[in-house]
Image (tube, rainbow over all chains, first blue to last red):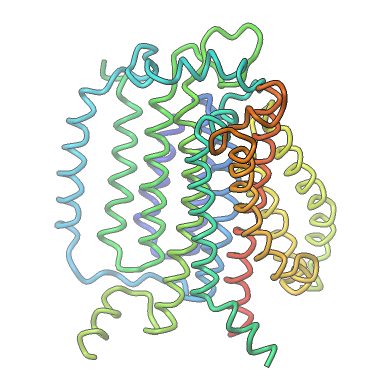
Length: 173
Length: 116
Length: 140
């Protein structure tokens, strides 16, 4: 049901040419995705998606629009080529899903390898009831360190590109 | 059988919608919106795979018999935040392109490049 | 900006609550849903709301740009430092068991510190990005 809403919003985003409306819809889309994550037991993920998607990224996109203008011009080329590419790719992916395990199947390969180890042993080994936190910070600490560095690097990149430093230097001179 | 794969099909529809926006739209901001939709569809794919029937959220509670797989949650949790950081980087590039070319329309930028 | 009285009063009421909630999410992430990533994002959302309602200048007076940049790096350093400390104490990189006599207690401490590092980096990076965008607009 929620997924249906997501599709409707995504198609509305394709059709709209006013970018402010597009970005508002993106925020709503994120909020719906967050609700869907709650329905699938991913509470931590839903939390993040709601704060990031509906909060921060909407603000950043609006700030960008304030700098670049908010009307999209009509593309001059025809729509059939992109549409054909998308339909062929989508068809191939649907064909690929036929091999996927049933939704919610407890015996799917993804649930048989490391997940039982985390679920059974992590409360004892780390003393924490929230498995997501213990996997995030302890078992997969290297990954998380990498992700943190990526965020840091992206932040540094933004600062360099938008020349915050240069303006500071001018003020000092 | 048909309904059991419904989630994955919706993911594909969303993914292709995002893909369509990326290749069809000439506006750079809208391309980034398309990438975001694509990205969210991947998140939904992962979380759908992590769901276990009759399971509950992966936080130890009394009386729970099965938990959903915590691993996809961890991966996607970090991916969302990394995603917003990289989106911000992309938007920064758009702002710089606007300042350099006076436009965020792909066709106008290419026209200027050809003339130069 | 001055005439949005309702907005200002409501913002004044809820911003402290958002900040408090962010801290709760940060330090209660071990037991309920939450953790460094979520807390960082919520924390920066509160500060961005403050900047939107009261203007960029007053936000930058409250949280200076320099402090934001230093904290950005400090969060990553805290994370890496936890790893190095565990190596110095004789464990592997990011092996928290060595922090306390009991492995579970060490794990708890390590996770708490690492999550704090993540929270600091995420919140200040988001804030730095917002400052960069908003400052660009003010400069034009």
